Image (cartoon, rainbow, N blue to C red; front, side, top):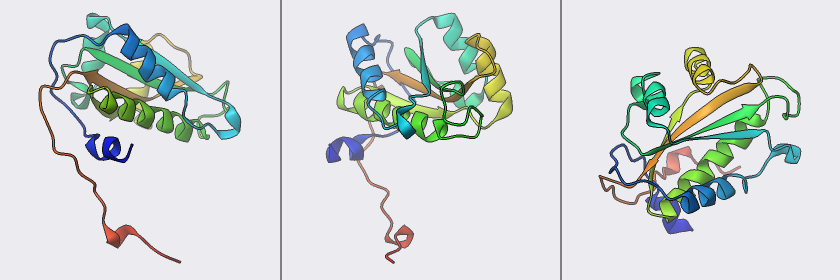
Amino acid sequence: MIETIYQRRSIRKFTNEKISDENILTLLKCAMAAPSARNTKPWEFYVIKDETTQQSLRDVSKNFAFNSSLIIIVAGNTDKSMTKNDNDFWIQDCSAAIENILLAATSLEIGSVWCGIYPVKERVEAVRKIIKEKENIIPLGLIHLGYKAEEKEAKTQFSSENVHFI
């Protein structure tokens, strides 16, 4: 597990090879193994295989414009959250789910990059419109997934300057 964490890197160049449905299911199962405040599980997952929809998502932001074969959007459902509002623990819950997807992808030798949607209002509204969802669904992150067309060295970003013992 520790090696997988070090090997997880943001990949922005992908081959055209499609990810199998079996691997997609594994990624989603790993996502839903994430911790959730009071076990509310306020997450929703949008698996985008359709190329036209993928292109619409890429057009939302230059930061989304990667050539992956698969996009997964992780969104919070405020109807399922603890306080039923947009400033809630759903953010941490969905972030943990995203990290699980990234680590599972790395272990399957699938490249990935997490692109932020929330809290940028314009991105939230644009993505919500593309996936045809209501106000209670708040897209948090867009994950590009695909087989790597670039390699990056495993690393940690450890800095003792950021560690405080009390």
